[in-house]
Image (cartoon, rainbow, N blue to C red):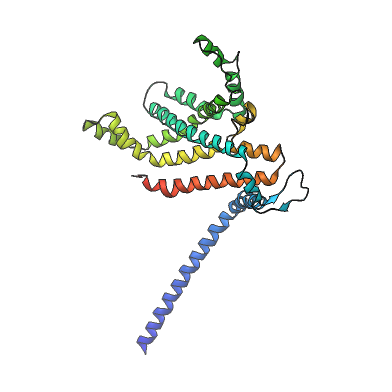
Length: 313
């Protein structure tokens, strides 16, 4: 009988400990959720709710000719599919991203490699390279508007000294998007350089010393040490560059307004133009859903496919 009582006591004690642990975990989880609650409220109010409202509105016709929006299903998406301006804007956006992002990242990496060395004047060079980042985009657009202006702009004078005929960079369909790309690269490269510089400084110097002792060249060390260990930084920089550049629209408002003939029109500016110039809220919502879908697809590819090829050690 005594053994049975002892076993019951042990079982009761274990059960009490188990319940105590469960209670402690529940308390910790409740505290964690309570601490996250303010952020979750703001995230829902300013991210999830607007996204759901935008998706909902994309199924309605809502423009100046429709005082009371009514449900049209996928009609907005069908019209978008047949819209030549939309496809031109998408072509511009894709070309803008596939040129601006790699060139900005490459330039940022080159600047970071140059500034990672202990040389005189490094602080001044870092400030100079990073300075375009802190200038508001409106100011940057006005600076480059003066540079690109025909006849009396800075670029026109430089081309004149070189004996090259003047070019209307912002007034010609063949050159305007290239001009916009140059402005974006000048603005973003210094910002991306900071992340590469931070990534370079986390790489142990011992690795380079060991490679040098073994007679490795600079290129060999860069290809087999620097690049693999910078891959996590590169993934992060790619995501930052894509999100920054796809929402870059201020310079278009100041410099071209999407012209000439939509040659410099990008997706975000087209959304703005549709919503606040043509007052077609339903179509603007549809365009926004398209842009969000593109961003989601890019994020999924980067995180779930590219991330698997990255070396973290």
